[in-house]
Image (tube, rainbow, N blue to C red; front, side):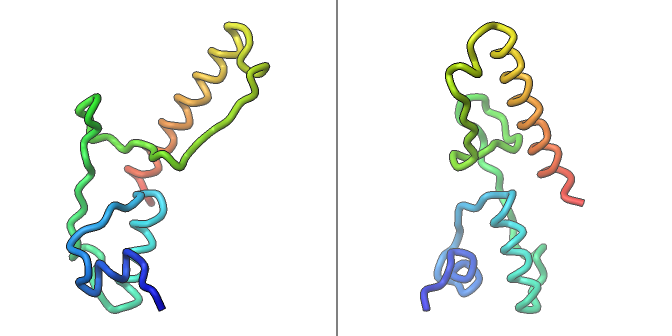
Length: 100
């Protein structure tokens, strides 16, 4: 069977991988623990946002929210949508920084 990037990393096929902090890092930790390995044995590097220079957690391209054009008509609706997005991003950043 074909391995995953996590198994390939642990088996030495890869020297490094790109991984989402919200799902793939916890899966990697679980896999390491199931193999009797210390999850702290691997160093993680959060890549900087090239535009802002920030290394704060960023949502990847797969997290998408959709809204109908009608839902964004009018200043009040756009402001509500922007507030929702800001709260969503803040929530993800808090969850990433505080996994417990």
